[in-house]
Structures are given as structure tokens and as C-alpha cells.
Length: 488
Image 1: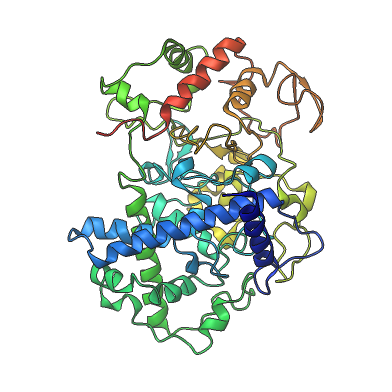
Image 2: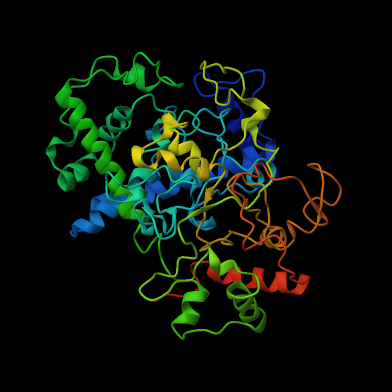
């Protein structure tokens, strides 16, 4: 794309952000840079291309029901119509070229989080990968470990207790989250899906009752309205009891279809160099081999990012939660979302004083607008011990990127912007001097204070005594975890 074309793309994207009903812009809103706008426009164009190619498959659909479910799930993940302003697909935060996480380098570098369908609203966390997410166990309490294990989302709030898989329940969070896809009612997602080209296949797979719903006359108006529903009317699409039941069941089936695609070999592939080495099809370089030995030994990474044991998939997580002492990320636009926007929605009433509560926020039901799973009342007593704790992410695809200079964000809040920085933090958190954000040497010779010191992990990190060469070796090993190295 030449310079003139990029300028036109940026102008179109800027106009789209200012369009009535699409911006919600207000005095304190964050401004996306021209470079970010260019990348966003490119990602959106790629999403459109991928959706079009996937829609073409409906002409000769697979005759296997499992593959039909996968196809439905992929179509919904790339469907922008399922957001309030019909401009944001789930894939906007989860593209394959980055391991199904955030695909906009400039946002990763400058912000850490992504805008929602209302483009001036940002969340407080970076997008997680949804590859390998369906392999997380249903959230449960392990008394031997004295810990919660499993679930999806950084705060485990998609438990899987209702639908049997955390990834399915995770898929039910973004559609009604005002800072993500922004629909006022889960029924709106069902209504929008009923108008899409994949409706017939959905009815073949899940039954003709899926969309047999008497929609109210104002459904279009309600579903085009951004913001959060008033407390007095939490389900603004007014349906009969039976139709509400059908809409709820169909919404569940949409989510289960998405989970079906996420567990497919297209997303959860096990095709990294690491997998090839384990299968005897490749060999680590000396630096990669040293890094793996350090990962399992002196660096203690394997204590939480487990590479499997007897009968375990090698998923590089133990599915627990931990507060590693990550500093707050002052680049997050969320800190500036303290006033009502044009849609009369206030994302962050606490403003700059916000501290991420982690898993405790889920247990205290502090995220009701995007809390797809109910809290087990027996877990309420665990809230104090889970304050500021964040789920241990898989390290698979941790370095997958479309080109070498692409910036990825790391940590729940996107504070880190390179794997070297992450490893250096694990190694030196408790050794280097404290400093203020943006101080000279930040991330190299000093670290800002943790966002929260509550329940901070002091067992496996902070003072590892690794040399610079050893840090580099660990980074080299982590790069072997990107899928696409081999074809089985």
C-alpha cells in the first residue's frame, strides 16, 4: 500500500470514528493516532476478506456436523454485525497472525488495550489469546493446592460451570460488554445472527427453533443503542418468557459454536517448533536448548507455566492465578474514562485511582456487565486471597507475530512490550531500584512499583540471578512455541 493509499485509509477510519452513533466521543476521550488508524483499517479489511472467504464455504458446506459447528464458530468470530455499531468482530482483538490476540502493533505499543465497537471506549486489560483456551478446565477449587484452578479471562470469570467449557462462556462476555461489542442485551446478538447468511446452517445444526422468536417492533432501535441498559430494565429487548428462553438457548449455542472453532486444529494447532522437537522432527538450537533448561530449572518458569506431566497437554500454564507485581500501565486509556461519554456511559468511575482487583473482582461480582458465569457462593470467602491475582496465561504463541518489528503487549494490562522485558522483570523485580513511570532506565535498570502488592508472588521470581545471556536464551526458547512451524 503506497503513502497516498495509507492517508486515504486513515482519513476514512477517522471519519468512521466520528460518525454519529459510532463514536461516543467526549472531552476526556482518548485519540487514536494516524498510525493506529491505518493499522486498524488494515485489520478490519483483513477481517472482511476472511469473513468473505469463510462465507463462500456455505455454498458447499461440510457434511460432518463437527466441522459445521467449527464453520459456524468461525463465521461468528469474523462477523462485525454482532457488535452494536456493526463495526467490530471478535477477531478484531484475536487475529491468527498474532496467535489470536491483539493484531494492532501501534495499539500494543502505545496503549495496551483495544477500543470497542464504540471506538472511544477501551477496556482495562489487553486481549488474551483464544488459542488453546478451550483446554482450560472448568473453574474449580482444589483443596490440596488451596487454590482456584481453570476458567477463562484474566480474572477467571468465565468458569465453564454452566456450559461445560470456559471458552464457551468466555464467548458470551464481549457481546454485551459496553467497552467491547457493546450490545444492550444478549438477545440482540441472537437477533443480529438471525439476519446473517449462516442462519440456515445454524438451524440445521442446532434446530429450527433457534430463531423462532417473536421480536418486538423496537428491536432494531434497542439493539442499535450503545451504553449499558438501565438497572430498572436490564433486558431491554422485551420478549415473552418462552421467547426469552429460546433466545438464551440460542445465545448459548452461538457461544458453543465459537468454542468449537477455537478447539479446532485451525486455532489450537500444536504445530510449533517445540512440538516438532518433542515429536523428533526437529532439534533446538544450542541457545534454545539452554533456554529450555533454564525455563525448567534456574528460572523456575515451569513452576507456573507448566510444560506438562503424565497425561497432561503441554500448555505452559497451570491454570491458577498469581500477582507477579506487574506495574500499572499508565498508557491504558481506561484511566481517562472517568466521565460519561456521549452514550452516557462511564467505563471507569475510579479514574486514575483504579487498581485492578484481579480474580477478586470476579468473586465480588464487580464486572456485572461482562460476567458470563455465576459465582459459586462457596467461593466468596476466597476473595481476600485472590485480590490482584491474575490467571497464569499459556505461553503458546507468546511470540507469534506477522513481521519481526511488530510489537506485542504482555501482562494483563499490556505493561510489557517485549519478551526480553518480561524475562528481565521476572529476573530482577526485587533487585533493581524502584522508579517512577517513564523514568530513565525504566524496564532496564529500575522498575516502577507494583500496581498492587496484595498476594504478590515471591516464591518463583524477582531475584533469579540470571545473566543477560541467560535471559536471551529463555527468550529464544519462548520463540519456539509459535504455531505454524510444521505440518503434521
